[in-house]
Amino acid sequence: MIQTRVAHIHIPGVKSRRFLHISDAHLSRAYPEDTAEEIAFAEKQAVRWGTEGRKTWDNFEDLMTLAGQMKPDALVMAGDCIDYYHPSCLRYLTEKLEETGVESLYVYGNHEGASYQYRVPDGRVQYPAYARLIGPDPAFWVREYGDLLVVGLDDSEREITERQMALFDRQMERGLPILLVIHVPLRTDGLLPLVRQHWGADGDRYFLLGNDQQSALTRAFCAKVTAPDSPVAAILAGHVHFLSDCPFAPGKRQYTAAPGGAWDIRINTDTSRTADH
Ligand SMILES: [Fe+2]
Image (cartoon, rainbow, N blue to C red; front, side, top):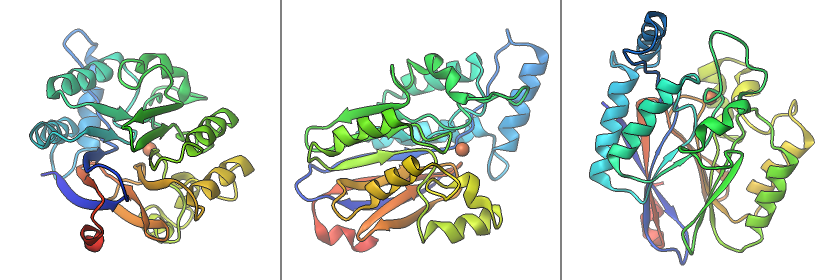
């Protein structure tokens, strides 16, 4: 069963829209032409990251059925939707998305370029393989909706680059509200204790963006996003593997999706609808 929670996001003057936000599907898949080891490993990982005794691909197929019925403006995929880089995993995911016929907005997570067999010094090395799923620039992309921008940014290495910062600045200057999609969520007062509870006392080092251990540039990015005049209206993230919705600024929330858990994001201009949150 997929757990779906509804989030009403109030953005004055913006057309009503709906997004299905997922993350961390950790899909692994092999085909008969793969080796016996690859097939066995894909199966093992599908059980490892499955929920309630169901394999990852069973959960994902349920999600695709839901997306097909819901027909959201887009399916927002906040990273780690692939468990490890392998052409068969990408083939499976690409085919499922195309069958569903719902537009996907996909950010790169730390697993998209990862391997369990050998250490990958920088997971971003696999960017070219994701051209079809993400587009030509997985580091930074923008989906224009006229009165709303959805900005996707790869923060899977838990750092923001100078190039990403410059590209983000340019979007912030446009005066349009932004839905920011990232994999590693921003460190916030609300999310920090939940992460420590789930991943241990120093879990925030690995699971959150904006720690003291990270660069000044990354912390400056977080400060910009959370500033009172920031155009970022909501953040859609993943990585922590539990559903959460914590404020990052007054009246604004950051949502994390989870394996087996999705957010039904409803953008509306009606203030009374925000009473749910
Ligand atoms: Fe992750």
